[in-house]
Image (cartoon, rainbow, N blue to C red; front, side, top):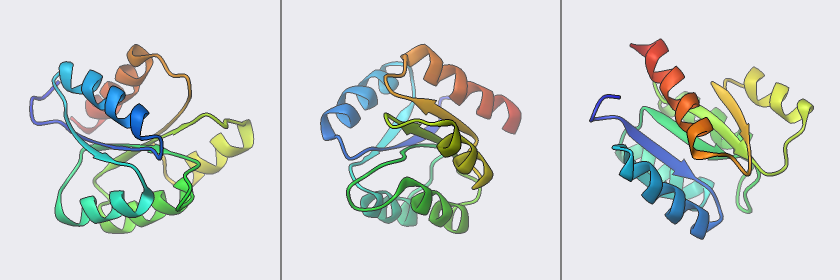
Length: 124
């Protein structure tokens, strides 16, 4: 994994963002954190991320709406949708909208790392 790999972690559960962000940093990633869709959009306006891990259901904005905004703002940022409210229909919709992967909570760290590394390998 390249040392400069930057992740943007977006979830409205601040404790989850803190814990997962710390675990990803221990694995060598640089992690930007946002606890709302609006915060994530503001961060991405002023910074870059190789991969965004984006919650599907947030209080302020729907994750699919945030995904579409990310695609316009930063098409080079791959997006992994992460949700505790998973369904086959939601997975299909997220992938059709441009998500690179779709994971459900609870998600093992190793599963998430595999998804991130697949994206990084594809992008070279």
